[in-house]
Length: 343
Image (tube, rainbow, N blue to C red):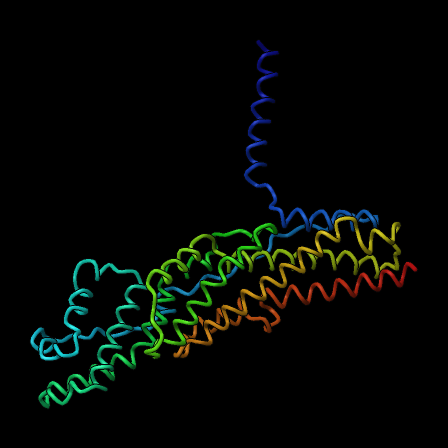
């Protein structure tokens, strides 16, 4: 009986360890970077760097900090009926029924766009001539109001949508190297959203509900912005640790036992190829995000402006993309110094 317990207990503990390790396994990007660190340390005959978890991205601003408050427009049934020549009654009724009240942000934007087009088209047509003074003043007031509100309604439609907010989810992991093609998959969605924003006052441009929903569905497939930012931050963290390893070796006047491996460890080419592609694809994505934000016809809320500068910028030194480029430049300089030292 004692032997039986001695045998079964280690087996049970081993099973628990396997489960724990499986749950905490490194991702593909982490493996690439840690393999490089290990080989670099071996070439320098030093212990590998202590790996620290990179910080998470910041919280995306809460709804009350990222959305504009737009007052409801209330008009009596008789007042709306008086404007029947503008053909807005059915549109307003659809917005106020049960389905309209639970419409998605994108559908609410399409409603606001359609309402503005009908009101402004009516005001700029012959309809005002047939209206009494009070109704004509009402039509003018509603047209001006909806013209002023439309850019904020457009912003809210984007920044209230789950698909958009989820792209910045902190409950994410670094984008795996093999998933960088997702940038190509999702870029058309940003392009269409930008097109819709730019042309919201252009009557020649026709919104397409099916295309809009299709692009939003594509954005829903993965939190791409967050995954790219976390991949950039992971790479910058590991390169910074590698830089500290090289700096200590150079400060000690050390030349590598295997200079060729220290300058370019076997895993270096794979890591460098991934970093090059990560740099390119994340720049494409972040540039498209910036173009979409620049297309908005309203000044962004301050919380979004701060988030944009801290996390999405291609110029702010502390933002993930520039931080990785700085770490890469410093790493190349340190390796060049190692070549000179060991030559």
